[in-house]
Image (cartoon, rainbow, N blue to C red; front, side, top):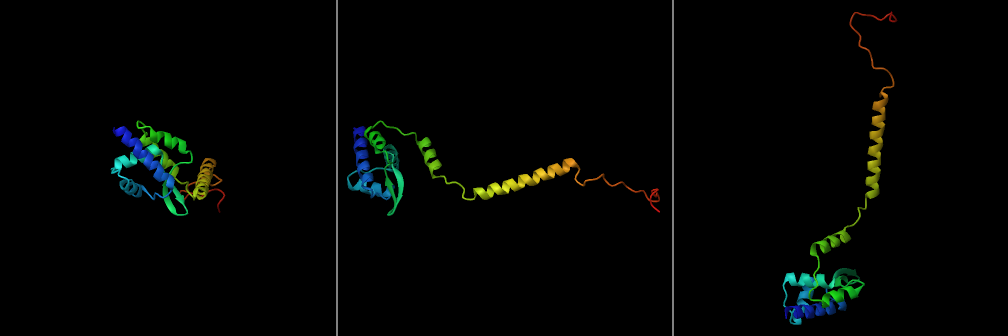
Amino acid sequence: MAAADDAERRRVVLELLRSGEVRGPRDLRRRLGEQGYAIDDAQLRADLSAVGAVRVEGPRGARLGLPADESVAASSASSASARVDAPRAAASRRAEAAEPDPDWRLHLVVVAVVVAFLVVGLLGWLIGGSGGSPPTSRQPGVTSPASP
């Protein structure tokens, strides 16, 4: 009985999402309540996951919608035994939401300059640095033959 209720509720969720008017999970819960479906957070998350709901940015703001390939979402919603691997799905959503660093070119230049300085310093150290032999120490009272 509960499986039939889940499948029917998910069909209603799909219809609501197809309308393009659902602003978010709270709005979806309110609309489901108007149609006689009182659900908690866990059920709502499970339904959104099962139908493959996505957040869509559009000219009227953010809305909940369905992916372009709606057949996948519809088949998973009609199956009451459909289970979504929540951790993997959450990781996938985080990966999709991750944006590349806009300053990556600047970071690359800074790293290149640091590496160049390290290479020059290392080469200078290996070659001897000053270009000549180290200075000799002079003892007091001892004069070299070349000095007057």
